Length: 631
Image (cartoon, helix red, strand yellow):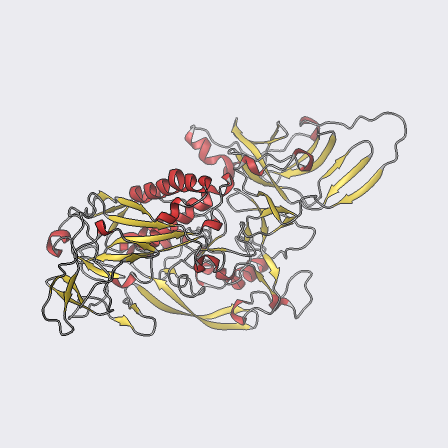
């Protein structure tokens, strides 16, 4: 990282209000142009423009009024600073890199050098300042190289800042590398890719372990003490990063952290800046929570540079993408607490994970949460305790956006003691509980309900998110009469398998538990649409018995009604309506009902128990068994 790009004097910038929309200039490395045509078109026309537009709308800055000319890299790691200008010892490097991208000469300032004693300081006559970059606050260099880092944990992309301005230390240049083999052009994976690029841009803008020590208070003064000779924070020699103050990140010890073998002391790093504290307390409904917990696993590039997966699972700034991600108010608060930005909180997405679950959820282990709620007969969501095994029984995510599975699996070796979260499990022999845990290690192996994909012969067939029409099963495989699309949500089935009957055969499908269906909110009630037939819900928990013909088969099963308020309350309030009170449901004869009509001649009736022809399995894209990693 190059520090000290001189733009304007501190007293000038410090007086400027943080009230101008962030302006990001994208610069492509030539590797981007070598992408396949479809991938380049997706990145160039959709992903990068939308990702940049999002942050330009979400963040405001003190406007950069001067031309940006980036500093040249020095041959030596040591530099001299004179009159706020950076001087190399003897010479500058021939090329200045930002990540994998060579910075164009037009973007560079003149090379300034001194001798080894700091004397004879001058501008190198063999170099000249380029025209620089105008009308931008941040320059983002993008490459698309299948680098060695791309093979680490199936990384999709990685990013960082590379230069900071001199007055307030704000990053003004950064880079991202998109791993070409991980770029998917499938429509149902578009949002995942877009979220990934937004995530990486934010690392370069400020959400980074190498930038926390440079954060500033609202008045522009440093949050972390500075060295008097350089004006920079003190260096942590062990980790070779600038060390932040306890006012930014504080280490907290949780005593009596419940695990399988008893209790342990658990050390946690908490982000404790004012706005982050306020937002995270409001989110969980826990006013004694010290701050927002940072990730403690994953090594360099993941630990401390993301939110802890266990407590903020689908927040977009956790360390792996697992399901529909949300850039929440907590993340925007961190960016505002940097002192470099003002956040537009209307751009934040609602975060459902852990919302309102209180201090026991936010401050104690998932084993504690699962055990105490099970003992009281309460829901253990968002965690789960159903081991993934055949026959697979699916569930719904808490927001009903996807069909999902509990990612509790058997690992090949016992988990580390601090990640063993079960003293007993249904159907698991006593003594083997230490092998079982969630498939996502960054979530401390706490098992939770998660999206997945269907595969056939190890090829992804479709995903489980309800909103995508491409996830519809083929008609001949649509045993539960599902319908995926923009107006669909996930609804639970009953405990009984769905079956299909013809005049010659009955088929029971082993994989069941939930499905995606269209719905409508009208006349004060929720209506679930199954095979284009409307089923009106009268109370939460009502079982809608389905018996309908499709593709020459009579489909029999049941769908469970959620509460009207859960699904329709927002829509009804917008229309000035409200859900009707619950009442007894009419008899089954009130609902659509088909009968199987066969000839009167006796027909052999073979009953076959069939597995789904499309086997359910957890895939790379679903991040259940192998997470898609961020860096």
